[in-house]
Structures are given as structure tokens and as C-alpha cells.
Image (cartoon, rainbow, N blue to C red; front, side):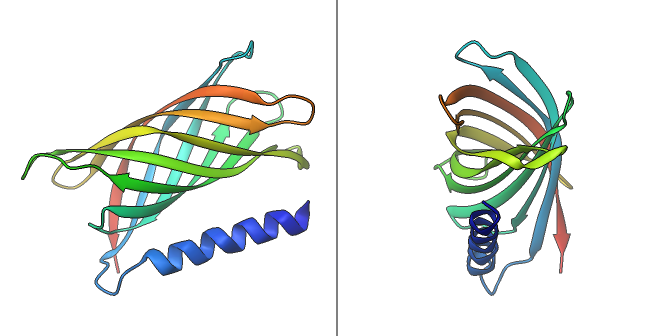
Length: 164
């Protein structure tokens, strides 16, 4: 299991390095709140999300997320995402996108007992003068041993640019 986690981490790191074009202006760091609502009998979990992505105006971008939920055992999710920007009005502040990714969900108390997961959905960001607001809705499937668990994930937050 640790070898698979190392491989996944290396792959995500390689994707981020490959995604940063020469003209990139640095990184975007984000933070926000996220909620998971179980679709097959599970409850609702509320947590915090941190994001990091190369700054890019490309239509296809990559982003890494770390999510921590406020409940017993401290659930963690690490996710690598591919984001595809949709067409928006010229000069408009709202920028819709599609998002899909995969990652690993585990407990801080027992890191080796996690499950792999995938998710897909849509979001939008609104660029302001010094920050960007974003919101997303995703369907998430966690491949748990025995039976998979499905969730609706809602996320809202801000991202701030960091120049090189």
C-alpha cells in the first residue's frame, strides 16, 4: 500500500511540474470549506480544504487538494485534479470549469487503512482584483473494501496568487 501511495504522489508531482509552462507566473494557493454528503446512507462531514496549482491561463490545468474533516479519527483526503476551463464571456469575471481527479482517503490516526477514490463535477471561479473566489460540486466514489461509498461534495473558497 505504501508503494502505491508513493507512486501516486510521484505521479501527481510530475503532473504539476509538467503543467507549469515557461511563462507561468507562479502558484495559486487556496483555502476553503468543503462538505461531503453520503448518497448511500452515509452522513454529512464538514471540513477544510487547501489547494495548490500552477498559475496558468491554459484551458487544461492541474490542481492538488488536501482536505481535513472535523470528526472523530480526523479523515484526510489527498486529491490530484485535472481542470478543463469552459468558454466564458469575453472579459467576464465568472469562469466555469469541469473537474475530475483521483486520490486517497484515510484517517490521520491510521494512515495505512485508507481507500482510493475518484471524483468528477463542475465549478466556477470569479476573479477579483487580488483574489479568486471558487465553488464546486463533485460526485465522489470511494473504493472501500466490501462496498464503495458515494458522496456529493460541495466546496467553496478563495485562492491567492503567489508570484515567483
